[in-house]
Image (cartoon, rainbow, N blue to C red; front, side):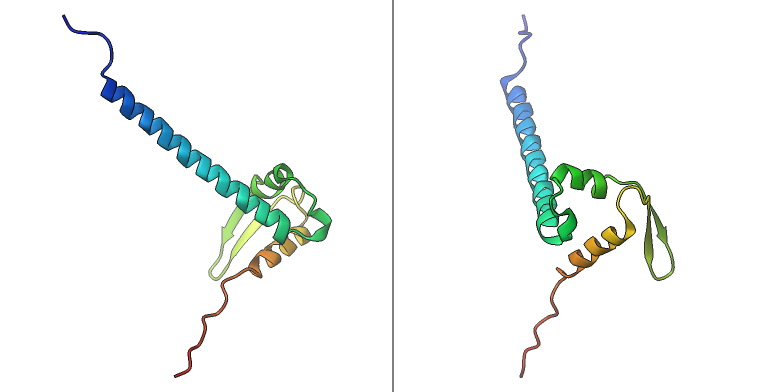
Length: 108
């Protein structure tokens, strides 16, 4: 007569997969939080620096936009109700300031 109870090894491997999935999910949430906090503290203009991370997510990240690709550039066509064009441009300009510095030139 066979036992109807599941194999303990199968249960253990399923639990290990659940733990791994949760670890990855936690790391993604931590990364998203840190990126949002970075944006809020360093890249937002003074007038909107008080926005919470939820407001930041709703107004800047979860916005609908159409991406128009042209020969040499990409254009984001945003709804003006989400964030005014000037504010969006100011945020992008501040983020761009954090670009990669030019490589150091070594003298021979």
